[in-house]
Amino acid sequence: MNKIGVVGAVIGIIGVVFGIWEHYEKAKYQNDLDELLREHNTPHILVEKALTKQWLGDNEPYLTIFLKNRSNEIAKNLKVQFLNLQGKVQKFTPSKAVPNFSISVGENKSLLWPFAPISEIKHIILFSNNQEPSLVGFGFRPLNPFDSKDNIIVSKFHVVRSLPIGIIECSYSSILGAKLEKVFPLFVYISDINS
Image (cartoon, rainbow, N blue to C red; front, side, top):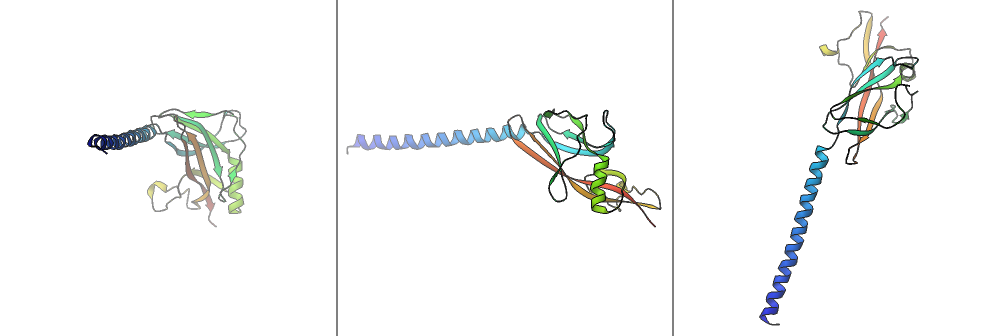
């Protein structure tokens, strides 16, 4: 092989190596760009409150959850379901106030969602507690009797305690099609009468 052939082969090999390296760098840059887009286009749904509320068209008050999208991107196709303490999906009588189609939560927007009739929540508590509960409220953590924020003793004859009753699961998607899911433990605060 002559010198020109060797130089040509070396230049060819260098060209192939440079082409592979350039392709790798472009792919790496594209992956970094895709990751940045996903990170900045991901909605962040939180369940911030749980309260009892009467809704127009419903025969009884509903456990209502306050959802907040804490991002600058829309959360599409929102679905909310309840998992009982055994991890199984539990269906509740739907509120007439909730539409029967896909719901989206806009960027930095909030939404009240009538989640479950209070009578059906009481049935869950009765099943796990073997007594008719006197509901005081709902929350996403157990009460701490040593924390002044949790000091909700009704009177010297009533003590408020918390019971876990399940998990609220929120699933939704981003505008880029990413499927997201968040879970929130649900506690009920009940009053027991001391004898």
